[in-house]
Amino acid sequence: MRFDRRRWLQGGAALAAGLALPVGAAGTPIYRRGNDADPETLDPHKTSTVAEAHILRDLYEGLLTYDNYGTIIPGASERWSISDDRLTYRFTLRPDGRWSNGDPVTADDFLFGLRRILDPKTGAKYAEVLFPIRGAAAVNAGQAPPETLGVAAPDPATVEIVLVEPVLYLLELLTHQTALPVHRPTLAQWGDGFTRPGRAVTNGPYALIDWVPNDRISLKKNPHFRDAGAIPIEQVDFVPTPDLAAAVRRYAAGEIDSLADLPADQIASLKARFGPQVRLGPGLGLMAICINTRKKPFDDERVRRALSLAIDREFIGSAVWGETMAPAYSFCPPGLDNALPSPLLPGRDDGPIDREEQALGLLSEAGFGPKNPLSVEYRFNVTDNNRNTAIALADVWRGIGVITRFVATDAKTHFAYLRDGGDFDLARMSWIADYSDPQNFLFLLRTGNDGFNAGRWSNARFDGLLIAAAQERDVASRARMLFQAETIVLDELPWIPVLHYRSKALISPRLHGVHENIRNAAPTRYLRLDP
Image (cartoon, rainbow, N blue to C red; front, side, top):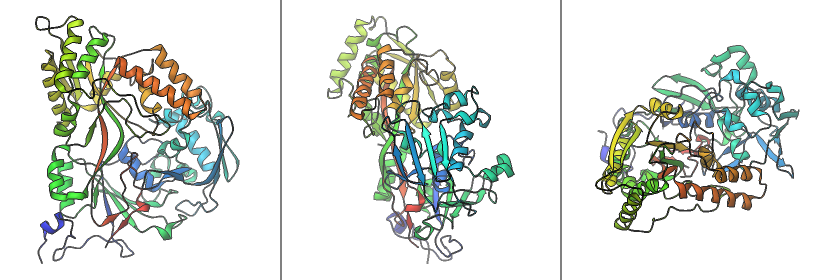
């Protein structure tokens, strides 16, 4: 019987003479999981990408972890307590925690892992995420030895973490790959090669069995994991899919069971072909226009507001990004923890003609008009969608008399230029948060945070609100402070919010248990694959 592509596209099984779905040693189907790219490393303390995070979530387990709804749940720890001043956290480990070689998981494994990532000798890209821990900044700067870090193991089953100041999102930080343990004997034996197949020892639901660069990373169920008997999928192959169009073809042919990203310009046709297999969900990300507030006339709030008012966010999100991005009228995306609903940009409910008239009025007040048009240079990192976004921005700005020229470079050059203080007018910026809290967006614009605050915007009241919020123990009071801080951002617009990220995926009808969530978490242990 020939392969019935139409039946597959309509959600049926792929059937063909001689075509067999890959199966593991136990005869169960292998879950072929599309992933953005091959990881640079599987050393949890040296990783920095979402693609690596998906794999590490299967290989390792932190003190806390996520389920397939994106809910924070107990991981290697079974319970915890928080001191009254919210500065000390004590975690009790599960007695049945085991590494993939059968060794018990102990408090010292977490102690060693936290000290290792903050040791400057490790060269961790993401060490700053853990700076809320007492002494972390000094250790990472080489000003204090790792042993001075505010972590302790009073006994083999207890991990104690002491903070500099109350951090409401600490539990979520401990789900991040930066807080994962590593198996010290394996690291001691193999050094940087401790993550290779045949050597890697992990404490999560799966263990590494193979890695073929640019082809697949194969994980098999860890027989020593406490819930191994209840995990339906025996083996998962993470398949790198940097070419999204090619990945869709492989999915259509039944070679991949899920894709974690989709080509935005094909969403309409993908929905027509695959129907409910196309899954769009919320996200923890922002795409914005960073403005160089050091430079005239962009130091004028009226100019910044005029540029913002003219943007047709609905058109860009729909026509350019195929609804894979949502219009952003706030700086922080909706649905964050520990937060009030965000303040919104003025003019959201006005029609495009009204917004255009307001923008023209603001530019006129700032000294610009037909005889003296505003000219802007917009820098962006090159992708098809980013280029089309730039063209859409230039088009709407042309409607208010603004002349736009482009500077397009690769992502590495683009972000390095901004980070190093390069001269620019406007620049594309994007941010995917590490945890669901307004602080992880607002901190980008702190005075002195030059790595992200490329326009060098500075507002003393904004900085003061962030400082006060960091010291506030009451959740509601802290949320109000962060709301006020975000209001300042929307009033002054050092960054113009354009779009909020959404997750986008293709999920085979054979795969069950994937639920769209703001953290885009779908650990393989909670999924099931039909034969």
